[in-house]
Amino acid sequence: MIPVIMSGGSGTRLWPLSRKHKPKQFLALFGNNTMFQETLERLTGLDDLQSPIIVCNNDHRFMVAEQLQQLTVTEPTIILEPFGKNTAPALAIAALQAMASGNDPVLLVLAADHVINDVAAFHQAIGLAKIEAEKGLLVTFGIVPTSPNTGYGYIQADEKNTVSKVKAFVEKPDLATAINYVASGNYYWNSGMFIFKASTLIAELEQYSPDILNSCRDALAKGASDLDFIRLDSDAFETCPADSIDYAVMEHTDKVAVVPLAAGWNDVGSWSSLWECAEQDGDSNVLQGDVMIDDVQNSYIHSEHRLVSVLGLDHIVVVETADAVMVASKDSAQNVKKIVNRLNKAKRPEAEIHRLCYRPWGHYDSIDHGERFQVKRITVKPGASLSLQMHHHRAEHWIVVTGTAEVTCEDKVRLLYENESTFIPVGKKHRLHNPGRVPLEIIEVQSGSYLGEDDIVRFDDNYHRC
Image (cartoon, rainbow, N blue to C red; front, top):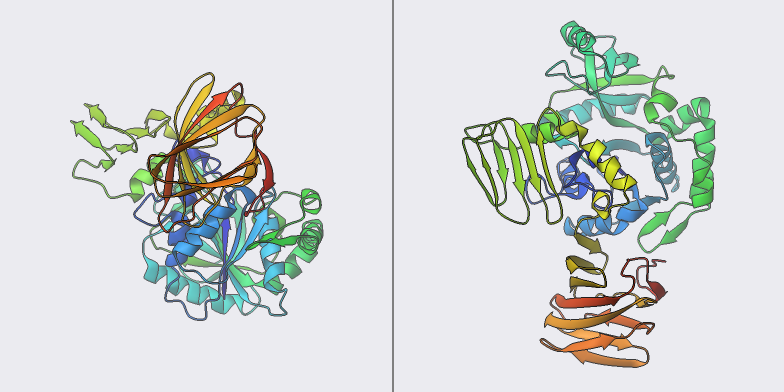
């Protein structure tokens, strides 16, 4: 059995923590591991599990690789989508890749950003589902509803409380309809998790969505290996229709079964659901970071960068990061996407990136900026290098705080030690490398007429970036 982890979401409903370039699946919201890592960790103990297939956004490739490395996952297959096309193309690509070696494995399809508290119950459901998948069925996991939730689609089963054929997939209902669904006992929340043989999915796509399958075959055949990644052909993938696996296959085929799952599942799709999943204190508050409160109940308060104090409030969400603060009632917090849309319309960076930005060589923190200057704290991992590059509009001063820096500027290479500095003029080719065994930390002061990240001309890069 091969786990297929779908990790292409942007997670804007948890802004400002979750952003386009580091969405919620790559955040540690419930402990030391990220949600992506927890998705893999909760599979520990399953029999005959092979290395995972990860389908992710091209922009997230280095975060995926690093977080897999932290878990010591060996020989993962990381497939890069040039742009999102929904779940049907992602699963078609994964199934085609899984069969490329001539095998026909069972695929366990999971989203990278779900919470499942009862791992034993989850494993038991996987065991039941695998039996049905090996019979040639497409099996989905139906979440036993705990409330008449109107935020989920539902699955209507032929039978109650057992493995059953699916009668219908239904859209998100209104409240009255949801109440009737839950009362009936044979409706489940649609989890978006599946298990099936790769060949079964391919056969059903061939019958019901051949255009998707053909485009995916072409994109994979014309793709290329890039470092540890499989990069799909962008032109071929662009022709692929964007569709969910439900619309493309599941709503048409008669080969779908559902396995009930009662395992403390949550898709963490809002601040309210994050509050529900996290550990609460005696006043039903979730407090994270440097937080002081008085007379506060039923609230989620998160501080990343500074002291946050809240007094005399109930049923609220407060989230503080280095560059943004959001305050909302829990009932209105699901509308945060409206703020993100306005930030995107205004072309503000807070919609897409954090102040702390991760790169394959390390990370940088934008400490301060003005009209003609910017200050960054740059950390380079041992043995890592930034690209050989130049800038048309800015000069840079580098001051070494800790570690040793190997600095290339045009044809000169020199070593800088703690408390030493250098100057990189406008238009000069340069490179920063950490030759040591400890992280290198420098302060970079940029000055010039334009300080945007797109003022980088790369001549050589260890990570194949443009």
